[in-house]
Length: 539
Image (cartoon, rainbow, N blue to C red; front, top):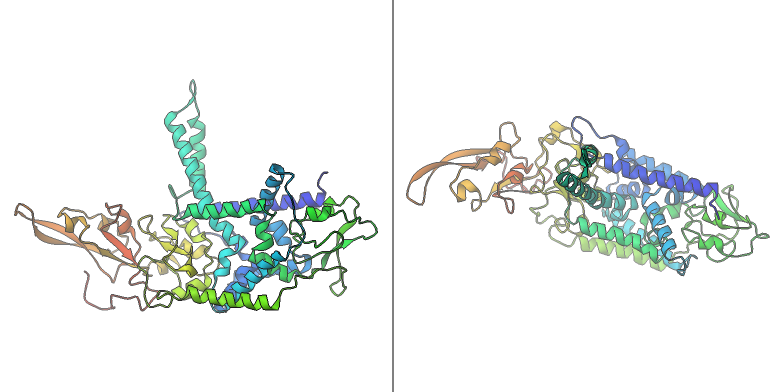
C-alpha cells in the first residue's frame, strides 16, 4: 500500500531536517577572516531541554535560546511533532527501524503502549532534580547534543579518514586508461572537500571509537523495539510529552467504521495505542501519521479540537508518585556521587584539565556545558578534545585542550562564538589573548638544551606572544670531555605565558615533550595561582 501524501510529506521533512543538521555540522569549521553565524547553532537554539536545564542550573537564560519556546508552543498545539518530524536523531532511528523491518520482516512486534515507556519520564525527573542543584548532566543525553557529539567526534573524523586514505591510495597508484587518470578527478574533489569540511588535517578525537560504539548501539536497539531510544530513554521526548499531554490536534476514531484490526498500532512509531480501537496516549504520539495511513477503513483522522472540549478515550501516562519521588532522590544522590571527589569540591586541580579560553570557573562551566562537541568541531588545530576522567563524571565529554594534539591558536576565538550555552564566553580576539588558560614549564630531564647540552630554540621561535613568553639565557656548561661551551637554555616568563600550548605541540619530543602546559595559573581560578602577581621571576 502506498503511503499517503501526509506521510510522504513527513518523510520529506524528516530527511530535509537530517540533511540540514549534517550540513550545519560540516559548515561549523574554521575559515580565516570569517565569524561563525548564529544559524549554525539552529538545532540547539530550538531545543527546550537545553533551555530548561540551563535555566535551572544557572538561573539565567541565553537570549537566543528563547527560540525553544516556539518548539514548546508547537508541541502544546500539535503534540510531539518535533520528535516525529524534526528531530534528526529520531529520523535516524526511523531509518534504522525501517531497515530492520526489511531484513527481518517476520519479527514479532509489540507496538502497544508499555509501562516501560514511563522510564524516560522518571529519568527526566531525576535529571531535573540534579539541575536544580546545578547538575547539567541531562543535556549529555539530549538527542540533539548526542547526535552532534557523535557526528563531530566520531562520524566526521571517520569519514575524513576514509576519504584521505582512499584519495592517497588513488594518488599513489595513479590508475587510469591511457592518458586518462582517475587521480585527475579525485584530487580536485578531495581538495574541495578538505578545504570546506575538513580543515584540520587527520583530525581525530580521544575516545572517538567509544562514542561511535555507543551511537551504533543506540541504532541497533531499534531491532528490539522501533525507535527504542525515543520510547524509553529520550529526556527531550519526555519533556515534550509533558507539554503535549493534551494537544489541540487530536486523533479521532470513527467507532462505527473501526473493526479493531490493530493495524494502526503496528505502524505507530511511538507506541501510543494501549489496545486495538480508540485508546490513544497523546504524550507518546509522535505525529507520524502512520496510523491514519495504515487504516484501510479510513476510520482514523487528526483534527483540531478546542482545548476545553474533552476527547474520548485519552490514556494518561499515570506516573507513580512513589516512583517519581524515588527518581528525584536518585538524581540528587547521583549528583552527590559526582561531587564527592576532592577535585569536584575545589580542593585540588587536575593539571591536565586545561579548559579553552573564555571557559567559566569550573562549577559554573559545568552548569552550562552540554558536552555537545561544537567547540571541538570548530577548533582549527584539533587541540580541543573530550574529557574522560580529567573532569570527573560530571564533566564527562566536556572540552579540554590537549597541546600535544593541537595548540590554542593565538588569533582564534571560535570556541566561544559557537558555544550554544555560553559555557565558553564569547570573547573578542583581543580579550581572548589576555586570558591565561594554563602555564608552560620545562622538564629539564627531557628538554634538549638542559638534558643533552644541544641547541634547540623551537619553543621560543613558535611562541606567539609578541614579546615572547619563552626566552633563552646563555648558560655555560661542561661537556663530557671537560670542554666548556655555551648553550641557550629556555625559560618561561609566567607574567606573559597564557598557556596556549604551542611550545608543547612543536617540541621535538613527540612522546612526552620537554615542555608541558598544565592548568596552573589559569585566569578563571584565583586559587590555582602558583605565581603571585608582581613576584620577581621569569624562571
